[in-house]
Image 1 (tube, rainbow, N blue to C red):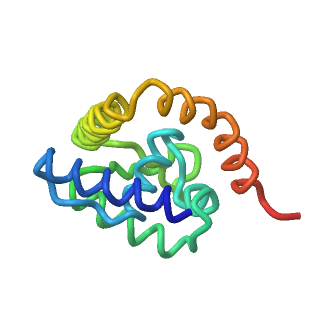
Image 2 (cartoon, rainbow, N blue to C red):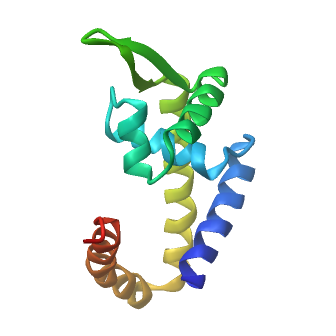
Image 3 (tube, rainbow, N blue to C red):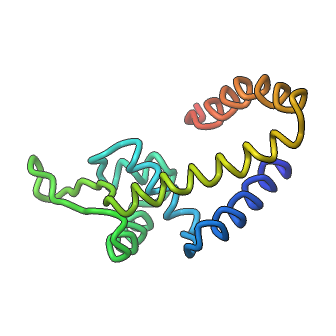
Length: 139
């Protein structure tokens, strides 16, 4: 876990520096990624996916709406509910983040050599399965 956390921290710092943007708090970034993967998701469903309290996600939604990164619209089928979607600015920011992160990691992998790249690539399916297992609700 220290290795993956270290990779994330270093990549995050370097990408933020390269892009010249102020970093989003991790919870806000996770909410944006959840909305990106589930356009039109409601606050309660987003909270469930993130394992957070609904009022905490509502606070994140308010901050992201104010930052012009999220759109909150009333659900036409249930006027009490809202549907969330990304703004164009959020989509551009996430795309720029991914591009910069891929360039950073790709460059480092090239320096590490073919053997290291192949070993890391071979480990990815097992890491994905581990992540999927951890995402499942405990029974």
